[in-house]
Image (cartoon, rainbow over all chains, first blue to last red; front, side):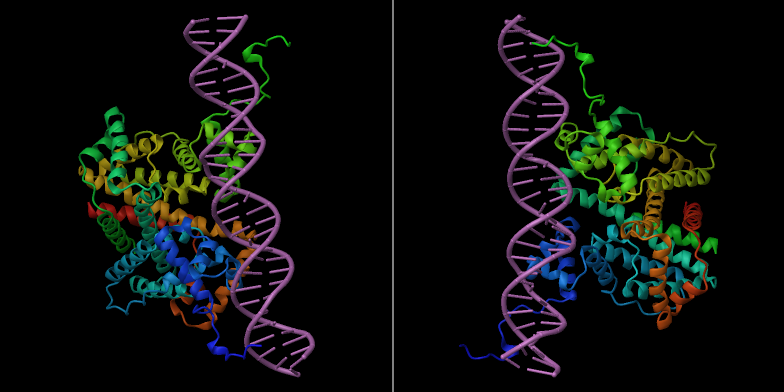
Length: 229
Length: 229
DNA sequence: AACCGTTCGGGTACGGTGTTCCCAGAGCGG
DNA sequence: CCGCTCTGGGAACACCGTACCCGAACGGTT
């Protein structure tokens, strides 16, 4: 009979205990690096070196796991300090930070438009944004709509921005290969001559990068909001 | 030996021939009615009364099927007639029509933010929208950005609008059940008193319906765009 | 009329998925 | 020492997308 070993020196294979937090972090790592389609329970378990079904001791199901991931991302940056009263500038900064988060976690934009986010970190952030919007108008209803519209714009903008990158990633093409294959198709359309304004855009117009387009829309939107109030 | 039958009277079980178009239509029917998650090759085949793998004679794979579905939806409404020169009003109408399409096909918003849409119907619609934007500015680059920003806003707006409905649908709750369960949670958060602005929104602010919020943002955005030009 | 190449429909099977059910073992209070 | 609760994990189920193959039927040529 082997001598009893002290509990805390028992060999647990060097692995820290399985917790909700570790599962969420591992899942986020996978989704960030390999895309949301590569996120599976088996994959997460492999990442953590555990059995697949052990995850279900800490997580209700995959859907809830994703919800936890979403909220965790909303909590990863500290809330900005209270500003000086320039609500347009502050809202712009909030929008930019939100955009950075969405770009850092390419799966987020899609998930955020699948279920309403209601986690604690989401609420905390929403509270902060509302406090800035309150500087713009005393009307609580309007302040709420301002926040909604802003979030809406950022979400839509980043979604579009990510669509291209995602298409490239899943087809496994390099940047150049993809540009070429699309370019060939677009050239055909242009040559057909049936879409004069589309042609004008392809030939005549520059194609500003994603950030420029984002800032253009953001600026317009904030300008429009100050008009409307 | 049976007598040879004329080709065109042969019994094909009364089923029309399998074509790409019929497959796309069946898939769209399923996705509209049961959600994008219920769309599977086997389900489509069952809807058409054929074998699952027969679909692959006409369709490269599921991804391409969805791309065809997206383009088909963009083609289902006729393009609006050329208008009278009021570009703000025309762009607003285009945005409203786009919103209606996205709402009629709840899977669309999500897919549109997964791959850049490049089908013929998408291009035709884009050409038309660009022609309206050209009335606002002679600068082709700016016109392109206007169209992008507008589409971006509509996409983001509808995504948010659908998220709630989708969450309700997949949890199988009725409208009331869902409102109650969320309400209970929100009440807890409010009671904690930690988020004063969030509370103000919940208690003090009305919650305008989705269309009102959409129109508010659309109006602001168009106002901002005329400022900027 | 006989052959032949091509196309279409579809059955089988493979490797994946989320999740449920059950069991083994460990820690702990009595 | 007995039982109770909690954690980890294996087996199995019902799906999924789709590659591979085969039979049947068509159009065109000999």
